[in-house]
Length: 407
Image (cartoon, rainbow, N blue to C red; front, side, top):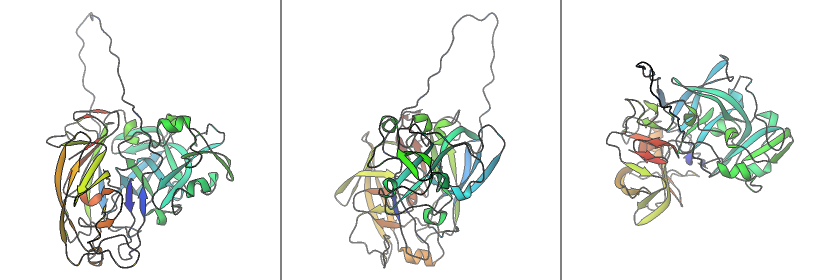
């Protein structure tokens, strides 16, 4: 969740968030060995049956009255058992990495991960207006027919590791320690990286902005290093197949908005007949966006952001403390997105009046925009009517090695 806004559909409250867990990266491409020799008899083999790699995602009315919240249901199990539960209303986020669930939504006795500094491992994910803090546990994560076995996940607001320490909350402007504050029961991070911090956290504790803690009690937590294998991990990278990225496919939405819609989240890129790149163009990370003569070197495509966020003082913002734009009429705009590989494209988009769309009962808003001063965030409105690919760093795909976006 690089940047996202939580917006009550009939209330103009908003919170911006930034990518949590640190800025490291990992390369976890796998290699396979083959044997050679002359068999004594012909050997035939049958290709493995492809697993179900597509699951439903949706936008629509929700308990938290959030516009453009792309949600899915996630099944978790105690590792190696059939003791499982399914958790609904989990935000699908191509801008962060790893599964993070509210403790209030988890009923299973998931085993906790031990910290190098002693005690239980806890983690802090920093966002623009808040932080999620909680323990790290392991779970088998089941998405469609795919399984990430014994994956490290964050259990937000787990009382066994206490309340968020100052070293964590100081990284944001609020403590996202309830489903209401987070706007969902959790976050399914399926973005560009395999783990949420990377090699940096293996050797550094980052005392001024720690990502991981060792907690010997609920009131005694200290920053700690953490092995890659124990970091909160993008579950897609742990699948036995279809593990090099995802594609999100959503239907088009009129500028007036829609009450609800259903789309698909497909795992793997070029690994099955349903996830080929086709004619999509690859834009390697990092992206830049040029808008009205200004080039934003920080730019990204993020399903966890519920609006297109960019700076334009000429567009009226909604009344009160809202970050969203409320022009008198729909405003047609354009920008140029460029990948690190030099591929670029001109993109046309429209910004509408948030208050008008909300009062009409819309939850899916293709014309929702909001103000930001230092980045250009192609949030969920950019996904409507498109198929967006997100390739994981270090993973091989038909479009080259990740990280990249494609559409």
